[in-house]
Amino acid sequence: MTPMLRLYNTLTREKAAFAPIDPTNVRMYACGPTVYDAAHIGNARPIIVFDLLFRLLRHLYGPEHVTYARNVTDVDDKINARALERGITIRALTDGTLAQFHKDIRDLGVLMAEDVNRAGEPARFIEPRATDHIGEMHRLIEGLVAAGHAYVAEGHVLFDVPSMPDYGALSKRPLDEMEAGARVEVAPYKRSPLDFVLWKPSKAGEPSWPSPCGIDAPGRPGWHIECSAMSWKHLGKTFDIHAGGIDLIFPHHENEVAQSRCCFGTDVMAHVWLHNGFLQVEGEKMSKSLGNFITIRQVLDDWPGEVVRLNMLKTHYRQPIDWTLRGLEESSRMLDRWYEAAGEAAPDAAVPGGVVEALGDDLNTPAAIGELHRLAGSDAGALKAGAGLMGFLPTTKAKREAERVGAAGIDVARVEALIAERKAARAAKDWAASDRVRDALTALGVSVKDNKDGTTTWTVAG
Image (spheres, rainbow, N blue to C red):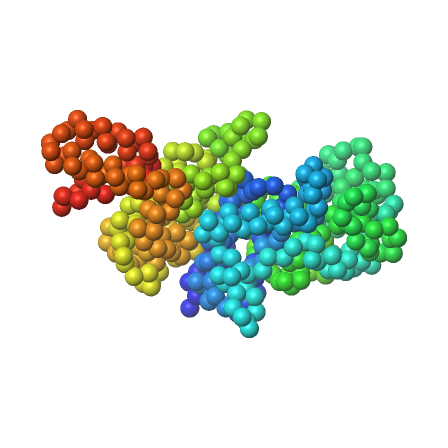
């Protein structure tokens, strides 16, 4: 019997037992990056959170019974502007940015296609790119026009929002209220100020493709249509879970629902909608103007990926998170204690029921971490298995220390020479010299510990 999983559904505003459409193929979609610049630490939150859900679903239903699609947006106004600014092609920009993103999230312990997919078997992790799905977008757009839910105007194709009476059900925004609050100055070719673009003409220098619906001039897709096309292609007309940041509920996810439902005539697009909360830095909204804009790579230059991942998961995914130096330091110490407790325990122990139960309650990571604390004092193997399910503590303390040393840029030979010098000073009872060496180690970012057996060990401070 599959353990119970309960998830909070943005569509219903309730937490309920999860019942997949087909338990032999549980299907999840998450909105991924727009690859125009280095991803910031706020972008890492949905990547980490929904990677954990993917891991949990694989644990509950079996790795061969879960399919996860996380898209890449590689056609966008920001991409066009950045490529022009740098004087490079759009493809060069998106390929380079995506490669950096992959390196960043791999260092965060996120499962990648090569970790999941097996030769000769259906792909269970898919990372579709928008520009590879123009044909699917054409079919959706033409289907919407044929069904009376979209129209062609001045080289554009627009979704006719008033044609869908229950538009706004996901964001809980009544149509009449949205119409009353819509801006007066809108494009003259729109029938309603709420109508949104499915396809638009391309300007000179912008990427372009043949247009749908008999439009002569080449063009490019609107933002929302891409996710409807990619989820349909890889997961079907309806699927189990759609996930993303809370900022995407409106208009992006609302418009995805409208496109998919109206094209296919379905009651739902995804049965369950999950959204993670916002991230702020040291109590303030992250902003370049405030000087607190932090990329994933900048954080990883100072902290091992497992510390960053643990720090992200200490807060429940639906709650806002305050990203602080103090929090990272606490997470680092916590992980050190777990490494000490787990030692060289075998990683193949059964995942503790308490960890699974906590995660099964709408990914209650604070409760799961509390259970790992309890296990740290009683069962090293279970601690390692439970932490492994959550995506950290997969290796040994030795490797963890090696990662920390590398991240901090420590000169290991210099540290070992100073420790030997300090040991000689202590043997000669030259306490002043011993203290001077300790101060030199501290200046290098190293903490030393004199053990009862006469040995001295060292770690990177923090």
